[in-house]
Length: 410
Image (cartoon, rainbow, N blue to C red; front, side):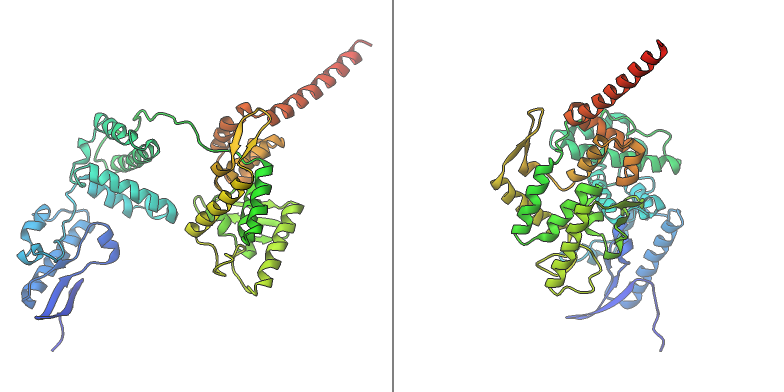
């Protein structure tokens, strides 16, 4: 006798006989369609699974099956018993949860980098909880509610507040595209600017960190800092450099977040550092490695979390050797406040001091023109090195003007 095949209908052996479940895929579960324990009678279980599949199909088509919001009341009483999975509850049409699901199905979400999706997911969970666990209708979100959300989050974590409101703005833009609302209530939430806590790396701090890393037998971490001081990339892109990404004395990088492609020639001192890195791997009998930077403890490519913990250990050891650096303007840069990500901004600033234009800097670091401008505006207002470069140019111009004027008087 042929077995009846029903989508997501699963049979599992149990202590008292076979048990039946409606078990959607991992992707559907992430969108809110939860597994359900079905009746012990197989025919009734198949019937219920068919009903759930019909509701799922209607949802996929953007339709709303009659009584869809009442799925919990239709579910077998078994699902409410302790230790059993709660019944599937499709989103209420036009609700915040429905909007989140539809946004996640769009290319605007699916084409994002993994790390970006991870951050977006965390912020969307906050929004869903705030919006009555996602049940609140999207049109009910007005500017006053958005402002109240921002203020409540800002009291605890200003940066998180800005991130959540930014995510809400993205979701409501999608709601406008769906013609659910006409205005974006999160377009102007009055987010206040915060003092930037970042620090530029003095060259002495770079040297100290690399020396400490080598002393602690983490040559690859020192190399990562050296590379990023030169090319100014995101951590994931530096750790993701393959051996093939470094050839002909040039770094070829495809940025994971933006897909931007850049090619940056190395410097002689950095080239020597990389050659030493490869020689170090050869001594450790690491052959045929795909990635340029290999963890000394595992013999594998660096995991982001492991790298950050190791980086912090090296930085702490370096801070014991030299706690702070004082710049020409008498400002202090504590060693233990320097982060790997700050090397990206340091590279931008160093390029500006060297006389590079904003488009030239963007071509090296992969920033947008606007981002480069914002970084320079943030750091270079009080930068004495840039002031010296600027005044040298001014003096050169004055010299040329004097020569012209003397020539005109003859």
